[in-house]
Image (cartoon, rainbow, N blue to C red):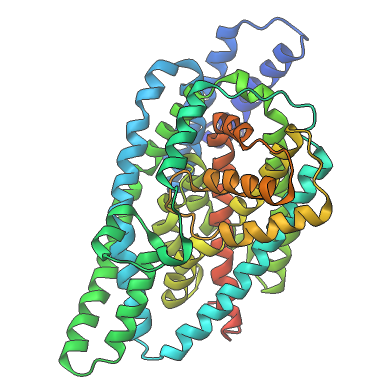
Length: 462
């Protein structure tokens, strides 16, 4: 029995992790002097056994989780090389972007025209929007409660560096004339695809699907057959591209760790901790109870969302996780017509993590400026954020732009001395926060497919 245990990679993973953790605790608490090289070697031995474990399991989820750990270690030990590894993540994201538009188009068109029930689309859309608004409102409330309890901005010393100034100016210049209502509708579908405007692709696909459902005869059959074939091919394409996911995850984590300065993190550590705790509380107090209400099979659900959430966390991009999230929710048992409608629209209307972050960060900046927002002022701010936070998916730096414009608006209308320039400093640690809020965005959208499907009247999932 003992020999069998010794040949199991899981045993060695646990054993070497324990050794590495003990050595780190001894060194960090001053219990004993442990040479840096010894700690470094212990971590690499642990990673070696973790790779062996992932190889034995032959699971994409396992490889992604090992890649996360490997990327962190590479970023710490080899920062110069790690900065170059971002190319792996960029290549993966480019390939994912080639999947998103044709996949959404094909699945939405088949879902609408294939069933020939336009009313069901409108009904499902209304239910989805109601659910999205309810949950994002709760996310805003959790964010407000968290920052008011922690008071992370009170007494914080925030200095804006030149790198943050340049990055902020780039975002603000790019989105100076953001008009969410107008930008829902595509003016050129090729342009929408090229710019990664997910919501515009969804609107075009819905209208195309409705038009196809009104078409009769061979024209409808030919186009419907094409879309069905296209959707199947794109899902297979997704499977091929996902083999690169572990490399992309390792590259993204390595470059993030290597490029993040520790000084900025120390100054804003309380903000990061507050955000992570608030997101965990939101998941436990909002998403988990919703799961119980819809009789969610938690074990099966967690198994299906682990991959897309891990990809979202490592790449800090919801778009990277979209094809896998859609595919895995179908495996969970949600019909394709529900998945293809709810997840893409959720990317614009159900950004739970992002809305929570916006309410939290807005009050944080006010606290840094020495302004104590009253409860009515914070509620008014949340009402503004409920409208302005929609449609930020696929727009680089949009959450930062919304944060700055909301603070400027509050300062002007309420006569408050809030310097939105202080928000520029947050960009120094934005990657670390973006990983967490993007993961919650993906998790929330996967859960939304189950909620809408249940609401549509299916009593049990297969």
